[in-house]
Length: 509
Image (cartoon, rainbow, N blue to C red; front, side, top):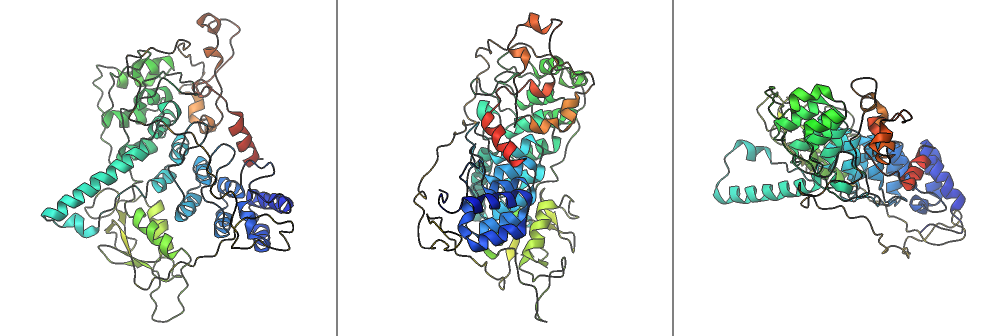
């Protein structure tokens, strides 16, 4: 709860500073009253942490978290700061939030979308790599290159199966209507996201549901290949077919992926999606965005922090990459030492394969080019300094008398209800009845392929949906002379949400 007696003006100033990236103003306000980091009332639909995350002001995000801001706080729509950062592709902010142990599995109030859905719908593949870091198991280098004996091998296999099951549940988590992250990435033509999600055990045969608040113009029971056919991206369809997608799957409207491609005017996909097609499908390697050592270096950074001291002693080992900070991690296998900041940046951005035979996802060492599967903490690594967090209490003169750090917030135990996403194990059978009000969509775009899917308009398909005029009228009205021109981008999503529009407008003001 915000301070309704003395923090209103200061809280609004902090919101403006977080939106505009004014680090000096934000630091001055938080030095006077650290409790302002939790400010989220007085008409503001987003907290300062949401504003800073959406605008990629990473220094202000770090400052707010150091002063006690709740990393899992929600805005008016139930969206966290992690969702806002993934929506706009600010992977540095995502990295900072992960270091503060944010909850990546939370879903918003509106349609049960997680941060993974927001990253997939806009094609931010680096954000996806960071989101799944804690779910991807990374085996030690020696365990890959040596034979594991009886009991140890059995326990390792069981542990790996458990890790893969957890990863699969997270990646295949369904939002409203049964849409998974793979559906959204395939619809928008982000083939690099599709390739990465499939490498992370995304279900290529997942189908949408026949219930939900969003209007699905393709129909319930649709697979990611149906969505890729609607989007019109050839490479997405090829990747899905190479990973086991079927051309013969019927959705609840009785449509094949080929039928969906024809209805939306994707004629270049017909030779590939035909049931008796003999088109040669290329083989695709593993995604270059896989990063196995990211999990280990994230855990080390959470323990030691990123602000490792600069070396002042002559016998101290300096990082060979930045030449500024003290080495705090070592690569398993080659043993080369780096500072934790350089190691984290390397794991988050590197896409170059290593020079030796190593499992997919290994990162090449910047010094010897050998594959790195995990990092280990050095014995002399400093511990992370923890700053005592001030609780947010009620006071009439907050700017003059900061809140006592021992007082507890009266609303600390209040938990908001959220929309639970539907389990991906439940799916709509193909034999269910189709939508009674659904008519075949007609793409009226002039150019080929559809410009709405090639331009930046695809980024707003999930955030600002609009129902097409074709769904509310009959087929005779669609074919009439007075029909309005519609594009593919506004014919899929059904209901526009004023709450989400208000939150986004406040951020982009």
